[in-house]
Length: 267
Image (cartoon, rainbow, N blue to C red; front, side, top):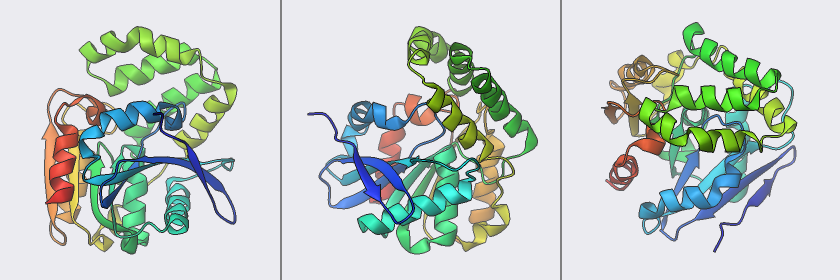
């Protein structure tokens, strides 16, 4: 049976999401930056996280519909927190990947009652100029409507070389389905990370955290994961793990990643 896409409505926006699994605990996944909405990959995501279904009911959130021309990560987080409230989600486990991890960090800082445990995958508390240059290069390809160039550049940066070559034709095919509206939203999401910095607010996080990075992360750099760990280790329960050889998107490519999440969230 296909996973059904649902929509949560607030006073000011609507946000799509889906859920699957039958576990008593709730796990929310906040996905990273993508050219097209992850709602189109709902069945694939549910299949990938099947090993967690007995322990958790799993929610996956999109960004809001009808995004404003400028939509910083803090606003993404505040909108997601409002969606949590409307759905009655609080004191839940949260896994934020890449930009989703930035959203999770803001939520843990500003809305600690919503998050019981937080896992962060390949993310950063501080987007610096070298990191943003990669994101801006993607945005420039989107502005030129170079769909194939964007997908290939995106894949080359987030995957290790052998995985990139394996999926190269799939990326080219997927690029053909990206609409102008997809490209415009993607540009706004990229611009929303510019100057993102919550480093000086990390001491407000009180929930247990697992920070997972990758030594060869060409997008956000493993130092970004280390910075988060160093800022958190003195005041909250922290687990740190760094992969070798899996690229920025280790959350998709490392075979033991979901087992690692399961152990953390159920311990």
